[in-house]
Amino acid sequence: MGRKFPIDTKFQSLPVRESIYAPENAYGYRLNVSHPKILPLYEAYHRRIGVPLHIHLTHGQRLHFEQAVFNMMKRRNDHVQQSDPDGTAHP
Image (tube, rainbow, N blue to C red):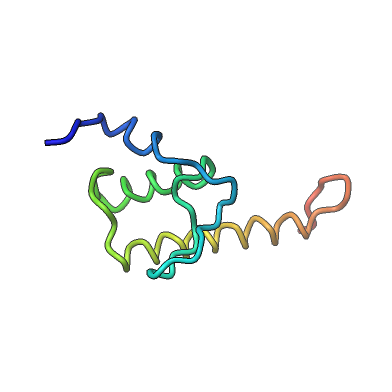
């Protein structure tokens, strides 16, 4: 059988692309889960839904994760757009 890696290093050893967006793929996934800004969110999602990191998410779980990240990005972007140039938010 192949070499076993501790869970902590398994995901960190994946090749990292520069974009947070995944290249076109047959599954319709839009996020690159090996990107350093996405990986912690992906791991937190695994923990939140109780799926060990060495188990792949189902297609539905992955789509739900991606939608949650896009919603979070939209909320953050909306908040930034409501701020003044000096960085203070409008109520």
